[in-house]
Image 1 (cartoon, helix red, strand yellow):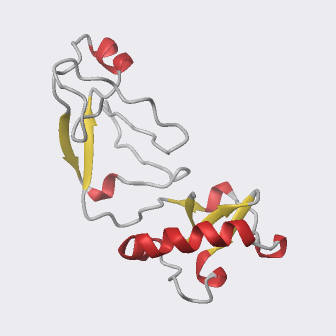
Image 2 (tube, rainbow, N blue to C red):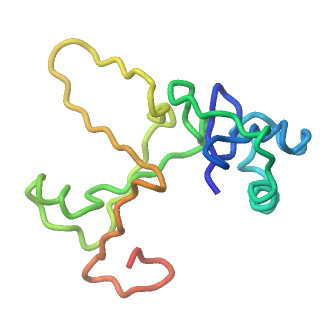
Length: 152
C-alpha cells in the first residue's frame, strides 16, 4: 500500500494511477492526508480490500507536479545522522556505535517537486530524499546486538 498527497487530497496508488480516498471510501476517510494517521489501522484494512477491487474508472492519473508531502503537518520529525556507509566515508568519520538521533523542524518537510528558495551568498545545506522505494538498506551498528530495538 502506498499513499500520496495530490493537491492536498489523500490518494491511494492503484492500477497505474491513484484512488481518491474520500471518494472511494464514500466519505469514511477524509480527503485531508494528515487525518488518516489517526485512523491508520482501519485505513490499512480498508485500503488492502479497495485496491484489490478498484474499478478502472475510479483510477485517476498521477500528475507529478501536483504531488505534495504525504505527511503535510507532522507533529515531530526525527532524523538519523550518518545513516549509511557512504555518508560516513564522505564525511571522513567512522560509523557511529549508536544511532545519532536528532530532531528537525516540521517545516523541513516538503513535497517532491516543491521549490526550495535559498538565501543569496554562500549556503551550507544538506537535503535528504526518502521514500519506501528509495530507502537504503539499514546499516549495522557494530557494538549493538540484533534485537527489536536495534536496526540490525
